[in-house]
Length: 491
Ligand code: BES
Ligand code: MN
Ligand code: ZN
Image 1 (cartoon, protein in one colour):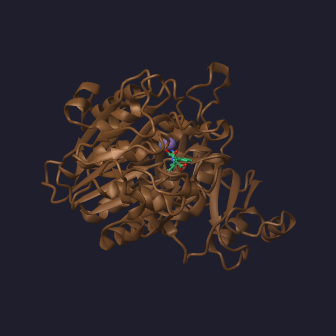
Image 2: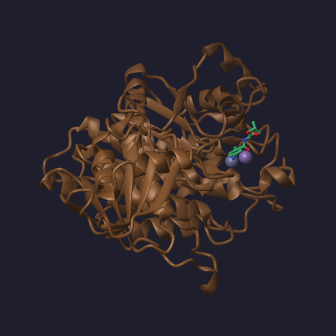
Image 3: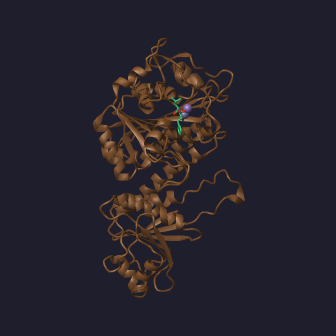
């Protein structure tokens, strides 16, 4: 999609679909509505809104043919939150609405009068992500033709800052698309090796260094927990290390992101019941998100050193599969008693986090579809956040609320740690059902040394059964926008 800026008036801009966000149906007191109303024939808008019961509330939309009175063929009115709410979230939603309403239309224009660069960026991001179609695995004639080849953002002044905002928005959106495609990809295709190859080819395009560890190298590094998870699989595991390091100016901060990359989670010998297994191709979403974040940071040339460590394995039931009762030695040296083979993510993450903290990051941040308990606690639209550092957690929450992504911090209560005591090994990896999201995090905490650490349990929002807000059904790319905003705050 080609996105350009225009300073034409709303009545003159030539387009198939003009998109106007309104928080009120009061034509007289809403300048953009009065302007359109004057062109369409005074009084027509008020009647249209009343006839169609359009109330300008968020979620409502009304598409009307405009004909010859204005430059646009159709006008789409989208209900938005009043100005006090997040401008950025509103701009993104306008872009998403425009792309979704496009149908066979080739061009659209978004009215962004008075918008700042941040909103212009979000609108561009919304246009591109809103047009996303999960068609990669449909055969020829079932692939929908792409709508919206071109879009225009109608702004007050086409400055260099706004042009940069557009290209940044597109870069973020395309990174989110990488995440969605990998998460939506079928698990017979998206294996650990496939993930590594995809990461390498994207990295190459954007000046990101990529090193891939195979089974042998993981063995040499003593990552027995990581390897245990993959033992029942017919394919090899991979660890993928991405590095984006700007040269000029020299970065002062280094952030290491870690992602859970289970390309399919059958549960292992503690096998999942069928209905819980159907969506388990999504269990590599943390790794895909991590890749998306590093790619976007590189494309925006952020003045921060950013690493991505993707731990990728497949949790299967082959003859060599790991069992409850097994004991393995972690990279850290701690021995771990296996309780439930379906709690595989924390085992992979433990060894990867241990390596990650040795990179001496200022901040260590992991994304993982880690626990069903997090979905029970927070529902599907909000991620769990756990941290050993209040300042880091607060800064991340601030970035998230700007972007309109939702996280909720859960406490790392120390007395829950006793659930992890083992009579056989140093520690066991699963506690009771009570506080399951927190005890998973407490297990991870054993492997991060004294790093300032943020753990994001994205089991809910990484993959949706139905579209919600700006997110489509399936892989969402949740978390990329917040991470980028957080990294920009460090610069
Ligand atoms: N990948 C799952 C968690 C999950 C569940 C992600 C639903 C997305 C949607 C994870 O590996 C898992 O199976 N966790 C177990 C842990 C339990 C055995 C302690 C769970 O949540 O049931
Ligand atoms: Mn599992
Ligand atoms: Zn899992």
